[in-house]
Image 1 (cartoon, rainbow, N blue to C red):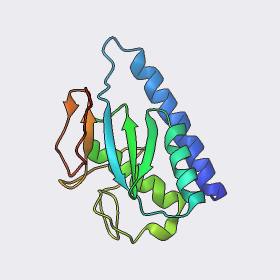
Image 2: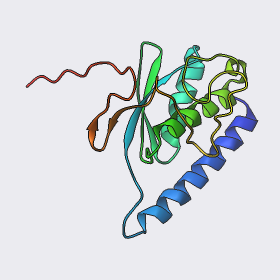
Image 3: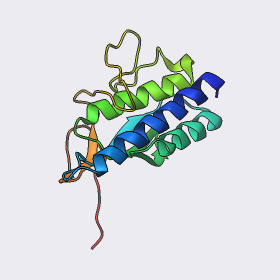
Length: 150
């Protein structure tokens, strides 16, 4: 992790904290929780730990866990899950710029991809998106089947 990434992340934490604080003071907060299934491009244990920690440090997002090359992330502002995915792609690239040309199908990934976020939010396509929203399960992309034992 570079010093440049560290200062960028601190900026995201400050901006995210202010955004959430202001929104929570409104009579009707503008929240729409979502869980997205993000395809990882980083592979080293160090980068995976730094990425997951960075997501959790950023107000409004929480790393839920790794599995099969993906990271599940809960986001408070999931009105556009595509923005959440592109924001994660931006964070991953800032953490490890060598992944910039790798495209695993999520918005914001790959060379020349115009879908870039302005904060910790981005855009998506039909292949990736929310696995769960406040309204319940979504079939917006190829998420794994959820089994419930009753």
